[in-house]
Length: 514
Image 1: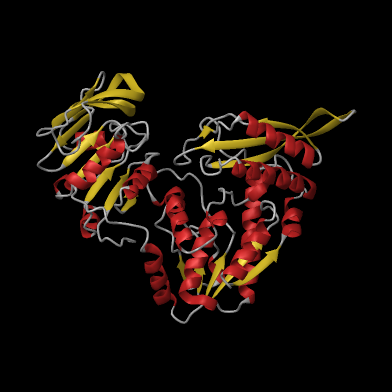
Image 2: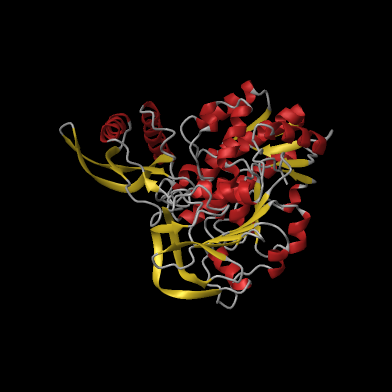
């Protein structure tokens, strides 16, 4: 457990899509938390001395045959609990309440009426907008529970047993659509669980550097450096702990953004004086990708080839004891460590081959979310441009080129994407738009340039705003900024004669095109 304040809250994951969001909200309130499965034993939970527990939502009905349920003994363990949505229903059913299927479903913004004469809703308005998303509902609260909130169609929008410090909300306080959601979570943490709220990131880097120094001793470490935020921060932490006993291998597969490989080399060789091996492997990757159009096949080829190149270079170093990886908390949860369905497998969560010969793995960021990683990066004096670099998929531009990959297509996309990112930054929008990039669509269309007819490529621009990357809205980039970007790309990038802007949210679309 990474926790400088010696207090923590447990998020019990019942398969809900918002478990990570709950955790981020809790950490934003300066309380450390961890996500674990609802199957976690009561003895394990009690041994960790958690100050409180939050049950997440989930997609199931409590009446389904294999519906997730926790050990009922947890409710008598003396630990404050807050159940949210499915977590509220699971609590109600486990201790004598009644859960039914509603004929009127509640989805979206809902007016909720509160009884604020209790710790959970202290200071909350008597009527407030909350986010509901449920089909089942609690029709009867368990014995000794008071009904603390109602809505037009939900007789138990919230309930609580103050003596046992058990609370439940049918609505989601963690989402931004719930007007006073942060205040409700804060009340649970501070008024119910009596947390101190003294967990801060500033001491994290210092503690991790000392921990790595003790773990490694006089041994050696190799790090696969991608140039992304996570691997960069992990590498600098290890470097500050052990210096030249760390070697970074930077596999440049040629699918990075314009000039990115040179920028990575500049920062880590010159600013931090690291042992850095840059492998320029673009030709090798493009040969493997020749005539491959299917996106999942592209991913597989790139992932496997990356590991092969890394293996070859690592073996040249001789005996190396530890592997450093930039694994972060969402990687762990999304790879199925929590209870939510596996969203995607991450190659840095147990995915490297066993025969490389490392005796241990160092993952200094394993407990952090992306925004926390950025804060650590700034504390380590990593250049702001790198720390705030746009999220970038492991397969790189290969999945932003629809169809097969060629050198010519890469050059077109790199130039167009660079112009897009430059103009967004010049317009002062680079922090408010959470991800933005260009896509080479594979579509060619007729155009007119000068006095001649053209038949050239269409570039799509994509920009989204999001708090958690699980849902996203398309960014309302001002028309004059889009016009400038379009004009520059058409005039400066050869073989492009049309620019389109993607105005699809997630869902139904994903953020990336492939």
